[in-house]
Length: 147
Ligand code: HEM
Image (cartoon, rainbow, N blue to C red; front, side):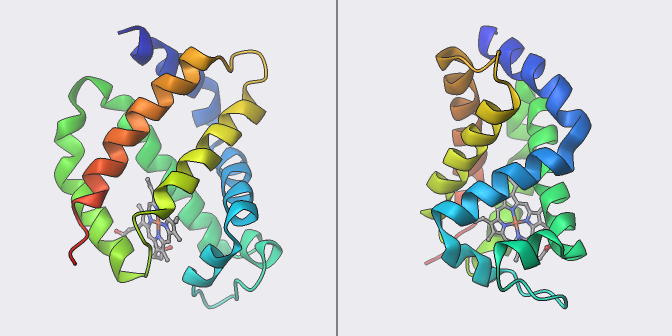
């Protein structure tokens, strides 16, 4: 319960500005693993982080990611209701060439964003609470990968 309160409390402000916070997260992701840029094939090209961040389709993806996080936060009491959705989301990511091992670096980028955005509120308890929720989301998505 304490974890849930920490997550809800921190998301309350972040969730109001999804795109800017999502941009911090993805900028960090591409810094840690630039090869992930190549998985975004949009009409407007995504050759560099800058190209990506100015591409409307990419910004739509940032919004999509933040909405999934928003859904997870809203469903902290019944995360299992998202399992089917997350499994399908995993399937779609396998289809676009994402590997499950990339979720570790996505998680790191998520923590980086929280750290930047909550300079006061970022504690080890908060970090652990988010990691626990993220692990549930990633486990559910990973079920969508087939060998
Ligand atoms: C769709 C890439 C992580 C949520 C997509 C698409 C690509 C993509 C290429 C299809 C085009 C599009 O809809 O924009 C990636 C890469 C990731 C990543 C490279 C990191 C390694 C995530 C994460 C989430 C997420 C962490 C949420 C937790 C979505 C959603 C869609 C999507 C909701 C739309 C699926 C649909 O059309 O039904 N992603 N993604 N993505 N992604 Fe990601």
